Image 1 (cartoon, one colour):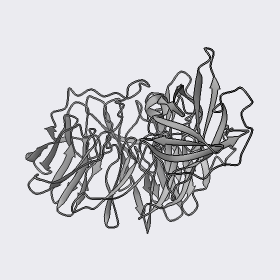
Image 2 (cartoon, one colour):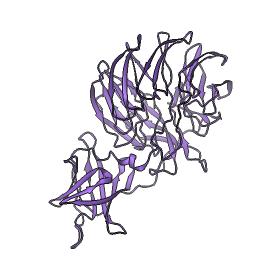
Image 3 (cartoon, rainbow, N blue to C red):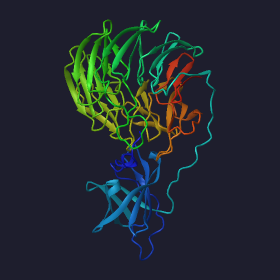
Length: 487
């Protein structure tokens, strides 16, 4: 996600012992033996990645550290000054220390060796984006309004999507032509929930709306209480960046939805009257999951809650340490949910007990896991990768899409479709595009690059795509809706 470089790289050294790389040039006589390039591998056995440091003297004669970690698109990221503490070198910017031992560099965190590097003559450099098939042109492409962060919802040959211009739009799937527009009055960041009769959605004016699906006429509105909650969407230097709003969840005539003021609501779908309200400890920006007798949701202060959906009473809560920015998914017999920087978590649905956790190397996980068969698929943020996992969290493949894949992927027997957000200026090269990946291998089958928008910081596709027969529909930050052929 969009954050300062320090936030991007702070968690990089919470790793396991590495495999050393081949030896390179030794330091010359009279030099500090730390100076030069060091390279190897780090990480747990199921996720080994390349890691390197270069140490060189700055203008003031102080040794400075630079981190190389291709999986995080990091090539010489400055880690600041290195100081000496006896035989130990302290790399404060990386939250680590290092000791030279038998010609190798042992990097430690909290007094424990986490990986070992060997001297190297070269370190990785970021290459050009490869030439990839551009794929099929959109069958149609329609300008809807302001930038669209929401995923489109599709039902019965119709598309429903809200924009930051404050309008919920109903459009025909066949050609993108407009049927009706409902003026909600403030930006709409979340996906709509559709039923045969109605469309439910949340607006930044603090209301949950129900409108008639055929006519777009308002049926009722329910006050979520968060009209005064600020939203930060396009600032590079503020950590609290957030772009999502929950999609309402409907079960047995009750709509479940969270609010930016930290409350969670159960609302009667027919009347719009409150059934119950739960006070959480942080704002709720993601979609809840109804899981049997429970409703599960996360908050921006890092807590995942499971409530009794009949009464709103808490069953369990789990502190995931960082903001929960991914909606929980049921993957087999467990819940899977992502966070900002603490990674991907699998939990027992009945108790919240953590079953496994996977690192995303400091990247935020904005995407939501989507199951298909025995596997699931999820995007990330600064990692720029889409990853296929099995249910035990073992990586099948990990693919760089050259931008931040924030949205929920759309998955078919053959393909994984996902959009990528582009951002410039930014420490990591992020380019907006819409991609089709081979589901079995992760290979990019085609990549449709979003149009260049001079002077615009943020480009590409944020909300997840929607499958509809032989089409996949995706909304863009340029305010357009596009329908691509799907297979």
